[in-house]
Image (tube, rainbow, N blue to C red; front, top):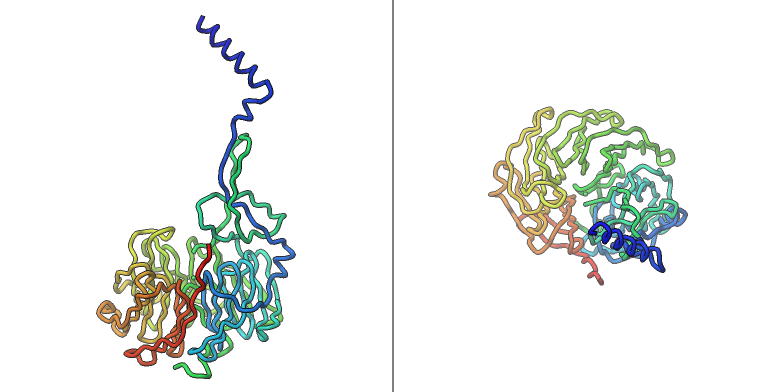
Length: 426
């Protein structure tokens, strides 16, 4: 009897499902996604242009070039700051470059990433810039960041380049699990009226978080696919890609000192001999626990900040001082506890460390084994991201804005100027 009752119930259920509505319609899949917002391919290629100045909202990498400070606005372009007088910097122009994060300049040619492309822009006249060359598909596909944890919607490359997101609630008939493609997401690289200028030869100076680095006539770029790409920029009219090297997983920053290229990676520091600039040779590696770590070098010492948390790795943050007197065998001299360090800069015996929420720290580095006792100054009212010390002027970028200090008298550091970040309107 129980079997007959069960069959009867099943027959009723089947009849209901075959009526004006179906069982399949009852099973729906609801979820929230980040729906991609596109810029067509044609618009993308024509989007590089000079615009009037914009307020900084989400600044990233910084770069010093002659009388200019260039500040990346993440995924949007580059703010051009006229720094002829560091006491009165002028936010003069904005170069629109969709998907931009990194940059470098030599002889008035600005090299910048634009999502997957590398573009070379003539900025000799900042009002009428021109693209000298575009290298397509140089970098891995990257997506602008989101401020939520919702999955990405389906990406359709035929629609163009993804430049933003729209949060959208989806309700659809359940058929089978929906899978979304994975794309790489960029994480998170004395003053007077004549101004301060970068090094001779028409090359600027990058911060320690840089993934673009110029050494004489070679441009080095680092990407998320563990690739170090090399470009011959000796002739602006004939810029060419001139090699590629797989340097390993987790590479994050570049720094050139003398004839060596130092790569900061999540598992250590890698040192390459670039005597032959287009054929880097691995010399040695300094290993440490998993972390995010920019590096700067002076004389026979490397200074490395190791940042913990998030995707960086361990729960320990510190500053490592590494002996490079034998470049083939880097040796740890001493580690110093830090709170949340990012970029850093070195000028002779002065070390500048961006310790995140703990502020900007300035050390007398003449005795690297006693840095802790030689902390000269702490600016705890800022959250710095990166610094560039040059000709006694320190340029600092952080969540509060752009700051410049005169440190010609280390006992009497003077704030020269600041440009604040515009408050966000949500």
